[in-house]
Image 1 (cartoon, rainbow, N blue to C red):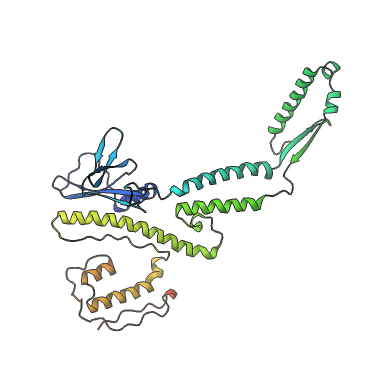
Image 2 (spheres, one colour):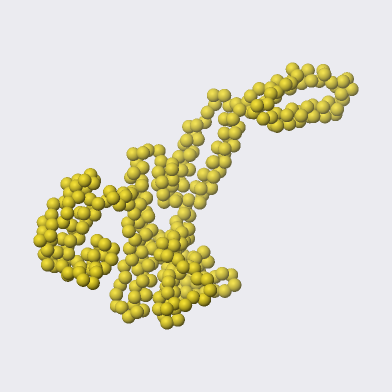
Amino acid sequence: PKHYDGFSSQSSINSVSESLVKQLLSNGCCMGELVLDKALLPSHIQAISTNDLKYQNKGNRSIPYIDDGSDQIFLDTPAVSIISLSQDPETPYSQSWFKSAVQAIVSNSEFTNDLRRSFRKASLPRATAKIDTEKFVKSLSPEVQFDSKKLTIAMDGLVERVRGELNGLDPEDAIVHYDTIEVDHLSAGNISAHESVDVHAKLVNGQVSTGLHVLPSLLGRGESQTTASTEAVLFLKVVESLQGRVNELYSYLFTMAARLQGHDVTVSFTYKKPSLRPDIEEESFLSMRQSRVLEQLSLGLISDEEASINLTGDVPSGDFTPLSGTGFHGKKEDPANPYSNTSVSGDQVN
């Protein structure tokens, strides 16, 4: 029995995988450790942050260690597995998958701010006031008219008062003024720079999409509905490749856990491949797959255990009948159109 001392954070495989994938994308590598208890029995898998991961050369090997500023924790143990993306063979250090997107994202942020400022200046109407200088000067007393300093102060004061009134207006407020001031709305008229804006936006969006390894439709910036489905499928291929990296880490750690128990086996961990189709729409395809697996089992190409895992995701029950190589599976006609979801046929068993 396992005894707990105080609070213990329990993480599922999915939670650990989320942490690993986040590190994999942000730092270009992820790290997990198979934690053993005092009896050297596997306890759990711990995701370790790679933010402070460094390497030290010892002979012909590079030993990983965590440098937290006050201490160095060396990870020279087979219980630790480090998986990298697009690793440069000349250095043990990996690069973030999003490195090439940093400059594009900064440019996109600046572009968005420029658009926001331009919109407020050109698209939204603004009140403008024109002061008739000659009329205003004539309305002043002679001692102010012929004193340059007093005249400047008077004109600056009028401009400030008018600016304050206009800037403090609400949309429903009316403007009452003397004929020395002419109030109007300022706009850009028929001037439009939408073509240059569109070109700039396309360039920035393309750089962001390329740097993030995500197609435009997934970022909500796709231009054609025709290509959206294709881009979605390609995105799933990227997700599948990331799953493959996590599968490698789990396979290694689970294999070590099994061998520590004295089992001379190799564990293969595999996540279900992502799909755009709901489970109920995949019944036709699952029927075809089941027919193929049973045919391989009938010919003895795979074992009963492998066939059960492929079909149910679990090993067969204890009272199953071994069928590998018995030729039990007869000829079967596959559905003519599996995409119709209406032609699911059963397996024929002799």
